[in-house]
Image (tube, rainbow, N blue to C red; front, side, top):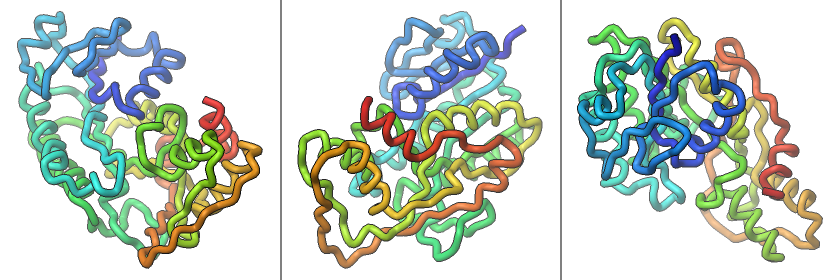
Length: 295
């Protein structure tokens, strides 16, 4: 008998891509149930409005038991300014607690997508033992949710898995004001791409399809392995990423450098824990960027 997998947050960038990945690779492995504000004709959906629902809403949809929960749904800032929105950040905490209180039963396992923003500014390569010191309200909200879930899972004998998601790219991220989608939009419009500063800050970009694969692999872990960072082991300067996109576009443009006194934070990762427990990234950065550019 298939296990019932409840997924939240399937209208967002990662969630939408995960559903496509499941359709191709895991269609017959799980009974998928969505908790969403939008109906999905392909899956049982428990609808909510402003994250209001209750246990009876599951029963009305014929869902009496949930085996696995994959909690993706969250406020994720689309720009740096949004990262300190107090009300939206607080919603991450309130909605996570509300979900726990309104599940139809205690599941066997709960997988939570957190963020590398819990680390803050680091001077060294980051691993799962690095000190957490968020720089934004968004980062603090996700760290609080981690602690909340660790306590809840211990009290109720539930297997927890926390996945801290790094810098993700791929088709479907146009809404985000981040270096890759913004640069692609500039290039397609025939404009010069912009870089704030000299573009030497490092980023470790992981393709969204690799993220989907690693998330699904985490379901198979038999015990709580502590937090696992889902990141690329390869880091690139922002300038290098923009140069790759210019090359892919074949546009005759140059980079406009915008002066700023604030240098971006470096994010470089030791991914040995991810590699050991879940597997390796598969998609080459140039192939991934090309795929996104020609979306």
